[in-house]
Length: 103
Image (tube, rainbow, N blue to C red; front, side):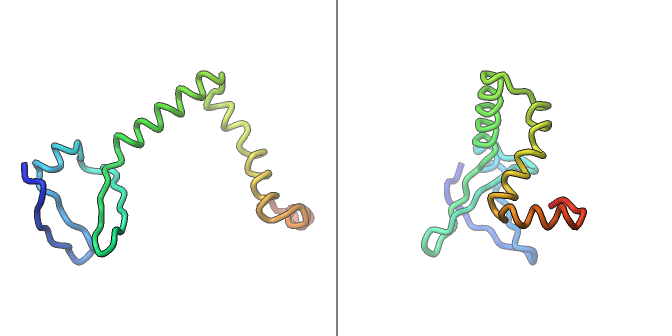
């Protein structure tokens, strides 16, 4: 497999990678790629394995802590309110409650 190649951008800013490169990197339709500007170059970093590893680590951490998905969903409103209060302040929340709306 070639480790260097040339490709062209289309009118929407997309480009393709050769099949051999995609296969070697485990990339398929819908694969996630991160990009980083390095000087006058762009570095592409496949994220599928990284994201899968992060998801697995998060799942194991939650299981070890005895936290279920439903537990997390049940706690979201309270967590969201805490973040809004921290970001906007208690006065903002009180004004929104007085208006009858929830941020």
